[in-house]
Length: 337
Image (cartoon, rainbow, N blue to C red; front, side, top):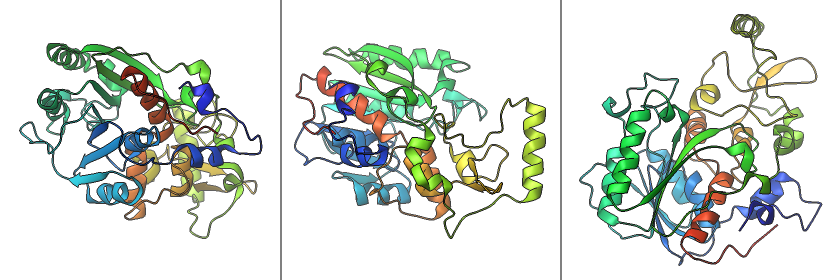
C-alpha cells in the first residue's frame, strides 16, 4: 500500500494525531511472524503490527520491555542478545535497530570495536533463522567513519543468500513531523521496493502538536535566564541562522536521548507567546515521534525520554512494513483513514 493510501483523507475533519491514532493500532495477530531484535519500546514493532504482522520482541532494558508489553499485541522477552542466543521461534521476517552508540557522530564511532555493537548478534540471528526478509535500522554515522563495517554487514547478508539494498532515508519524507535520517539495510529473497516519498505529506511540528504547543502543563520545566543566555551564546558561536527552538512551521529537529533528556544547549524547547521557553514534554516528544496518544510508556520521565529518543518512529515503520508485505507477496492493510 502506498503512502497516498495510508494518508488518504476520507474524513477531512481528522487532524494529524487522530489519523495517527487510527493508523497505528495493532491488528489481531496471526499473520507472518516478525522477530524484533533490540526492540526498544516497540516503535518498529508497532508499525509492523499495524500492518498486520505478529511480533516477538527481544530487549534488555526492563522499562522498554514493560512498555512493549503494555502496548503491543506481541510479547517481548527481557534478554541480552548474543551471537550464541538460541531463538525460541522461526520467523518470516527479522527487524531491528542494533544500538546506535558505536556509530553515532555524537560518540566515539568505534564501530565494531565497541562492546555495545549489536550487529554480530543480529547477523547470527539471521543466519540461524534464515527469514525471507531482514530489515535493520541505524544512524547515518554508519555511512562515514564506519562505512567499511557497513560494507562487511552487507557482505555477510549476501553470503547468507540475500540480495541487499541500503538507503539513507529521512523520516520527514514519510509523514513523520521530524527531520530524522537513518540508514536502512534490507536483505531480501523475493524483491524489494522502497516506499515512495512522493506518496506522503510533509507534516510540520505545529500540525503534529496542535494546541499543545501553546499550553503550559502543570509539570512544565522552564529555562532560566542564565540558560537562555548560555544558549544564545552557544548559538552565536556555532553560527546558528535561527534559534534552535522548536519551529512550528517545519518538521522538528531529530529527537535524541541527549536533546530530550539532557539539559543541554540543543535541548528541544518551545518559545511561548509570553517570551518564556519551556522544554517539551514526554507527550509532545512522543507525538513528534508519531507514537499514538493511546501509547503508554513505563518508567521515570528520564527513562521515557530515552525510550522515545531511541525509537524508530512507528509511522515510518508502517511505511516499511507495507513494503515488507509487498515483498512477501501479502495483501496490504485493510484500514485506511
